[in-house]
Image 1 (cartoon, rainbow, N blue to C red):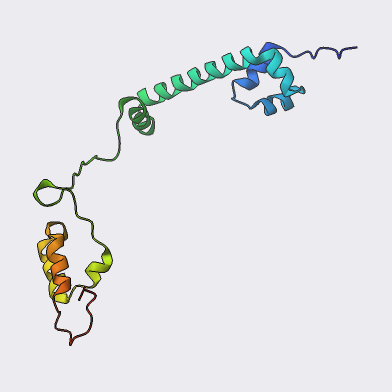
Image 2 (cartoon, rainbow, N blue to C red; image 1 turned 120 degrees about the vertical axis):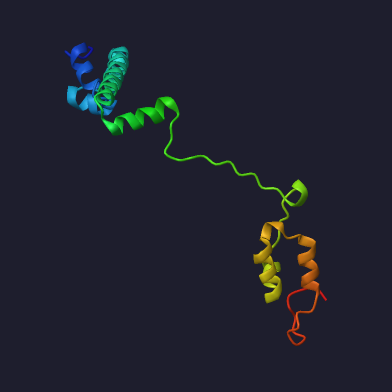
Length: 151
């Protein structure tokens, strides 16, 4: 023998669904199973949630039109593509518009103080990698100690 049908009305389900309660929360409030809600009231839940979204959207627009600065800013970002951040486009190229040269930091650490000073004065991006490597091969005047270059 089947269990008696629970006496749950569409309006009861709609009332909790409009609050965007989860199915578990609605089942607890209405004293039924999630399966019962999904089986008998799926359309009611979907419709109530969509209506609630519309009401919320309407309230946001009304709030913005009454001068709520926060809501005006938020809606501008959502619907008008506005942003707090200025966008800057930066394109980096190497010498003569070619590709950037990548250098291992350990190569920079091996330079003598004069070479480092030259780099800062010239701007690292404008320095040719080959000239840096030539400097690494040049003795640094440090008493014959290895400066990290190739012999």
